[in-house]
Length: 397
Image (cartoon, rainbow, N blue to C red):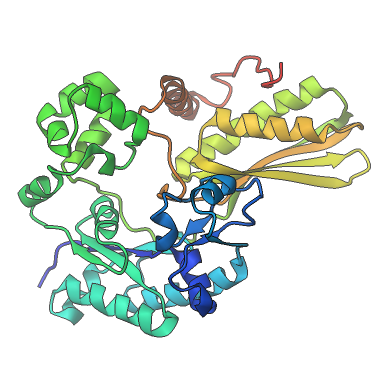
């Protein structure tokens, strides 16, 4: 018997904070914020559900989190502990299906189509068994969304958190009805600002997008965003679950034929390196959450600097701005032998805690994103020398 394509999205519940509460029982039931001390300038990595009741969320400044909940317990992250638990969880995933696409340490897509015959064709039984296995072996809870595609599965996993399971209809007409009453913010790429703009046009729910139609949305949002948003409103997503080994970083370097002491030359090199990195990010469909630079001196000493981002990006200008600021802060006082730009913390899909750029949140950002994509296509067709970015000055100039 042939079963329909069935995708699970498994998302651990407040993962970092839950691991802290598991390992330190005295924290159970208390608002826990992972990220650092309350007086630090960093951001929240994770918040327990008790802390979320106070409006605390990932990427929020730690000081703001403390202002909202002074009695919260602020914990420094223990990445070694989270990584160890993550390996256990992914080992459990692979006992259900070999088609596992990790999005981060605490969530993944699983294509269980080929395993349905082992469960009498019932995907809910798979979801329940998987959650029970995680609870038994890791003493943690996970929420699972079950659907015919990745977008719907990810949407569903967030509908009954924590420790929930949601099954999306598989019939196309039922999917449309399932999505219709949802607010437009539930669609991937529609953030707070873009939702406000949609509402000014009288579009408050997915049903409004469905009735507006593809042609109208394309006319309004453009050839890329319009069809994409309409497809999501109709519940369509053809992306496969990819079990390829995720890339850990993307980088580009340039070694000068002669040691270079001119800052202007350094900046122009940064422009070229950034374009290479940004193009590869977009081609591989990754988003970056950390930007790095490498500087090698004329004496062959190598220095690196990096900055973590509150919001994930794959825009050239975002990468360039941060890379340039890092270089200007370092301020080499000697000739440079090599410069490099790289990105790490790669995500295949922006998450709730690593927010993506809204489809049309800010006109400048949207224009920049579309420009990057257009330049990519032109260079792919006519070569890298077909277009060249004009002179760029640092934000201080």
